[in-house]
Length: 512
Picture 1 (tube, helix red, strand yellow):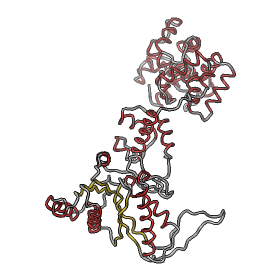
Picture 2: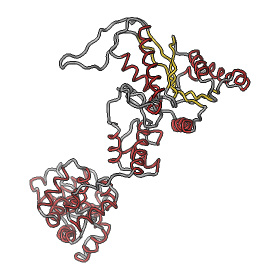
Picture 3: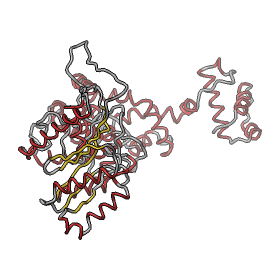
Picture 4: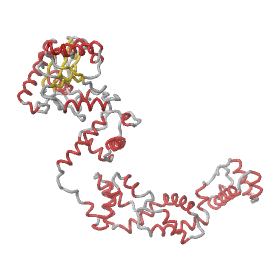
């Protein structure tokens, strides 16, 4: 019913002059009779409520007020409060409401008209209707308790408060449950408990029964799965975003695993592992489309690793300039630690390392460059150290020199059956990590502990002095895990922040 302002002004002009020939106006303006009647009613209401504005051709009162100034609406507004008060709630069924309304106003709105008018009317009067119902349903003491729960920090009590104080809703019980992030079954149970045992029964703490080992293990698996998803791009799960939200995580986890989980549970689980929203400093989210396949392949290799097989996590530390280094250290309040800034270092180091996961033993040497020749040299070193093994698995990142043609040709040569039979060497198998996934490279946790121990807050005078310090650290580490093999990867040293184990929820390379 949208017409031009010129036509509205023409109708208003005739209304003021009391020339209300509907047939003439409809024919002149080419409008329907109902449209003419509507605007005549609008000007009639305007004249009654704002007579001084009738001649102001820029002032209109709106369609809702026009519709409310009818006998249909006045009868509707008179009847509906008593009709709703008779409903037990909280869910209002429009069909039942219409039947009671029609019994009192048989000449009133039709069913479609009633539905349309009721939704608007209820939105406008929900607060006053609910207030009257709350006073009738709860005692003043109960209302004070529910208000305290609603503004408190206990999420469960907040849910209970919202569920009980929502005395009227026409969106259905499922919508209410979704709004407060619980299941419909839980919502019904809270209402049943209140009706049978009272409000005090809902305010009691939860069961003190200890969680069974099976349930605890199931929870840990859920947390591991969520952490695993956080480390990946949401686009791999069909979500067109560049970063995760709690709601998206809950949706993607439920869809991917078939296990329903609410966004509040996701938030609790992530907080348990110390996962928070932080401003990004370093990109560690993998965009590898084969992330899941590569991860599952590595996990399968580790779970089926034989006694005559070894698995190595490989990476290079550096290049690291030899110059005064900063770091965390104890200091007096008001006296922050400082170190000298120099423009030119005394040299640099590159330490090429391989960590064998089953024994937690390191093999390393120092390189002048990062290239394929150094990788071939590392393979030769590992072949000599583990010549009695049947198979060696090498896991490294997607650097160019880890997948060069020269390296592939060398691997084809050393894996040749005649070559291996002649020199008695193990088979070399490459198990690549997903791209941009340094958190899966277990040796990064070793580098983190080493840097904290011998690099941070250091001021070595020569490259050789730094190398000797790193050698001492790695040698002591190897000796420790030879004597205590069952404690490999624990925090007993107090230096490696992250356990040196391959796991989808492990972040071997911390950021920030």
